[in-house]
Image 1: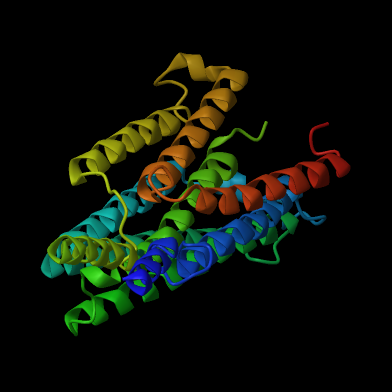
Image 2 (image 1 turned 30 degrees about the vertical axis):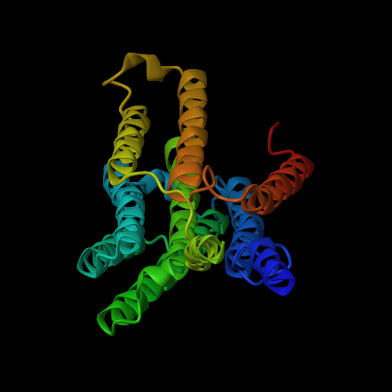
Length: 209
Length: 119
């Protein structure tokens, strides 16, 4: 009886996560990673802010990204990414209920919305290139491509993770017992969204002059 | 007595299973949809600031910048607390994230100041 009581306390103390902190190591690692990502994106955003008006020295490379931003187009792709955060939480909610079909549908929708956002970014980059504003055009364009390109790579990695979850769900490996896996991928996805909330405001919408 | 012990153990097992699955209190789908609608409205206002003719108040740069920064912070907060579950989860997760966020903000404000960005 005494042994049983002790075992029961042990189980209670670690809250079922089997960790000395009583919280999930996976989630703690993801949150720590996301905290470190703030430093990465902070550096890229600061660099862009410092160089955003730096035109090239020659007469052929004076166009900077802010001169040719297509705000209505970027607004639509920003909205698409924002709504993908909703579909992501709905996927997690469906998995918690044990509804695998809905989980797959929401995960696929999230991945598709992410794909639409990436498609928009490719279109934007192509339009810039058509205007002659390439990566090495001037310091402003280099900083712009580096910042938005890094963000695009993060979204693309998120899509790969989402598709892996869809495959796992199809194989029956995603059950209500694995909600934490979906939650951790969701945290990454939402972070990519909040970074864009920041980029969209600071880079695209705040007037330069 | 032994039945009571068994029932308690079963309840604890169930709770542990839920914890193992990473479960914590989640809002309803409708609550998520309402948050998304609020985010959509805020995004619409943000975009309207670009079209000065739609709302003449945004012809003033100070008003525009203040509005945009406030909306950005509120949107960031809503996604982090509701969609990322910081509101319902263990506070240590939020603290880890906040540590990175505050450090980044501090470091880059100093860096931007060093390059006389605000001048």
